[in-house]
Amino acid sequence: MNMKRFFEPLILQPKPENAITIAVSSRVLFNMEKEQQIYEHQGMEDYIKHQVEHETEPFSAGPAFSFIKALEAVNTRLRELYPDSEELFDVVLMTNNHANVGLRLINTINHHRLFIERFCMTGGNSPIGYLKAYHTNLYLSADPVKVREALGEGIAAATMFTQEKMKEVSETQLRVAFDGDAVLFSDESERIYKAHGLDKFFEHEKAHENKPLDHGPLKGFLEALGKLQKKFYDKGQRMDCPIRTYLVTARSAASSGTRALKTLRSWGLEIDEALFLAGAPKGPMLEKIRPHIFFDDQMFHVEGAAEMGTVACHVPYGIAQRVTKKGTMNEETSSAPK
Amino acid sequence: MVATVENTDVKQKDADRALIVAVTSRSVFESGADDDGDEEVYKVGTAFPLLQALQRVNERLLEENPAESLLFDVVLITTDRQQQQQSSRIISSTRHYGLEVGRFCFSSEEDFTESLLTNNVQLFLSTDAMEASQASQKGVVSAQLDQHAASCPSEQLRVLFCGDAVVRLSSSPAPASQQAPQSFSAQLGEMRQRFGLFDSPVSVVLVTSRGGRESCGTALRTLRSHGVSVDEAYCLAGAPRGPMLSLIRPHFLLSVGFSDLKE
Image (cartoon, each protein chain N blue to C red):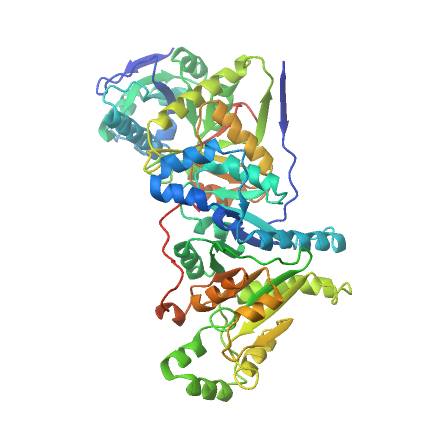
C-alpha cells in the first residue's frame, strides 16, 4: 500500500485561557488593498477567483504586521525565562474570508515566517462567538462594525487602517501607546469637556483628583501587558524589558494629569512613560517614541499619528463617536471579507 | 428478513445520480416511553432538523434546475427488531411530517449493514456510535449524529470535515477503502457548486483540531483534490473543540479521507 496514515503532532500552543490572545483580521495583518478593490468593484466571485489564481503569491505586510512580529519576539524571551509557562502571546487569524482564500493566507504566513497556528475563516459569519471562545484579549480589524460589536461584548478592540507611511519600529522591544480618556479610562471626563468646556473640565478633574476614573475598553489589555512585564522584572530584567508602555494624553501634567496617574496607581497598573501634551498634537511625540501600535478614540488623533508614520488605530468608544470631525478617514467599509 | 418499501408520496430519484443518505428511524423519530402504538405518530427526534435541511437543499437544487438529478435521496432504515416491528407507524409518521423520504428499509441488527450495501447507500447517519462503526467497517461512509449538533435549528445544511488524520496518497490510484469517501465527497462538492458563495443551503466546514496551519493547509488541498470547495475553516491547534463545535453547529462530522478512523 502506497499510503501513509498518521496523526499530526499536537502543536504546543498555549491554552486560550492562559495566553494573551490577539485576534487579527487578514486585512490588517497583510496588505490586501488590491484584492479589496476587486471585491468592491467586481464582486465576490471575481475576488475569490483572483485569490485562488494568485495563491502562491504572498501578500505584503499590513498595518498590524510589525506589532504581531514584536509579539513573537517577546514570546521568545518569555520562553527562555519560563520554558513551561503558557503565559504567552497567542495570535489567532480571525477573518470573515471564505476558506478558498485560506491557502493564500497560509502561504503568506509561511513566507513571512509568522508563528500563527490558529485561525478562523468564518466564510461571512460573525466572528464574535469565536472571539469569546478564544478568550480574546485584543481584536484588531479593518471593519469598524465588527470592532464596535466586539467592544459591546466587552472585548478590547480597535479599527486599523492601511497607512501609506509606516516608520521603522524596534524588532526586539514591543512598544504600545495608549490615549487616556475613552481608551484606558472611561469617557466620563471627556463628556464634561464636550458639554461644559475646558475650564469646567479642569475644575472637575482637580476636585475629583483622588477619585479613580472608571475603566475604559483597553484597560484589560494594559493589565495583560503589565502581567507579562512583571515576569521580566521578577527575573531581574527591568532595564532590558522587551515590553514598554506609553500613555499619550491631551491632559496636562500640571492639572488634569494627576487624576490619570492616580487612577492607574489605584488599579495597580504601571505605565512606563506618561506623556502629557496639554492639547498639543500627538503625531510628533509618537514619531519619537515609535510604538508598534497606538490606540485613540478620536479619529483626529489617529489621522495625525498616521500622517507621521505611526501605526494608529481607532477605538470607537464613548462620547467622541457622536461628534465627528470633518475630513475623517472613511470608516464605512462594505461588508467585505476581512 | 429485510423489507424495502418505496414511499409512494415522494417522487423517486435517479438512483445513478442521487446522493443516497440513510438515516436510522430511531434518530429521526423519538421512541416514547410507551411504544405500544397508542399514538399513531412519533414525536420528532435528533435527526429531524437534519432531514429538513436535506430537503431544503433538494428544493433549492430543483429551483436552480428543475431537471436536476444530483439530489439527496433519503432512506429511512430500522436497525433493530423493535423498530422493525413498527413499520406502519414509521411510514405514517413520515407522511404526517411530509418528510421527503424515498424508501424505507426495515431491517434488524443482524442485517442492516447488508441492506445499506444493497441500497447503495453513500452516507449512513445514526445517533448510535456502534451502528456507525459497524457500517463503517463494511465500507459505508458513516457518521454518528451528535445529540447537540444535529438538533440545532440551522436552516442551512452544515457538513463538517475533520482534517486531523491526513491521508497522504502516493501517485497510485485510491485503494478500495478510500473510494467510497472520495466519491461521496466529490458528489457533495459538486452539489455545493450548484450554489453561489452567498445564501447557499449547504455549507462545507473544515476543522483541524490537533495540528496547526500545515495540517489545515493539507486538508484544504486534499478536499480540493476530491472536488470539495470549503466554505469555512477553523484551525484549532489544540484549543478546546467543544466551544468551537457549538458555534459551528454542524449537522454531522466526517473525517477527511477516512471513514473508519478512531480519534
